[in-house]
Image (cartoon, rainbow, N blue to C red; front, top):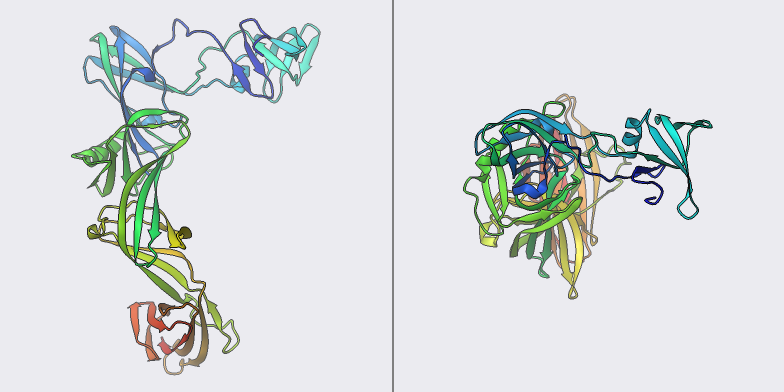
Length: 479
């Protein structure tokens, strides 16, 4: 394609490719690209980020137009704030330029202009046909000496790139400069396409009473831009944003971040609580490449006390009217893994929400046991993970009786149930039966000790012997 023209812009229709050459126009704004950057920091939330950077430019006296290049495509223009620490500079206007180079846009701006249609191939050579571009919307319309071509397909060459098109989004400032010379330019803005998440690896010891926990953070950059050698901060917490055309003013974001950042210090990631959030500050610069995901170690702890729980129950389905009398209902036995985020266990730090993947050790190798999502967990709070269902534990529940007591009290009844739990493991286990009971209820009879865990939950803890079974019976009166 490069050999087809003589210094023009060549467009391969249908391929969407464009190649341009040439310098900036003499009237172009003064460029201030990423090479002038002296500092960069990212405060990343679960979705979006606050970007702050400083650049340096040589400014003449009077009114000056600057073009700040190297900004992410997802910048939110209404959140931009400018600062000029050296003084003597005033911002008059700000334009966010997003008119980017593309085949469709070049053809649109070239309508009515002279172009050249190239017929042939690079191997056989091109036949150059002078033409005027009449329309480019929905197919090309070209006027040539021999007539008008409709829906022309091939390669079109335009003399030059239409003025005003950019290779990347840019921010243009119109400044009033009273003190000429080298000036520091401060810039802050919110940008989408930046996010972070936490991931955890829990390795359960063979005795199933302790686990090793590794915490990682993954920072996702889908802005299309690069952030080299940035100071990185991660904010854990649910930040409210106003959707639609009125985003949260950047001043409010900046105020919160200043509160979070005050006195932050530490090792790999310094942690601090402020303003109902938690801030994690990486104590070294990090580079985020375009369209990348970077993983950074957050925390690790060894031999954390853990407990495995087996839980079953009828859930919200209390009465079994859809089944024949005495017909059993199979119940899954869920496996839960629990530990406490305590300092004496090597934890005791704010753990941001994320997915915990649990592995066990069997025969000298690792075995994936399951995963669950953990919510934001402050220090000294319990973490309870649903990791799967027990293979060797079987539970069945059936309704053995139902008595309508409407004549005694409107809407009241008595129901009796039997829950059988069989254990095919080589060791005894405790299975927690959790029944959800509606209305105002009282246990009339039960074969095992019970607890009213809350207004709707009836609980039994059944000891089930190895290779055996335990039968639970109970009757409840409901109003």
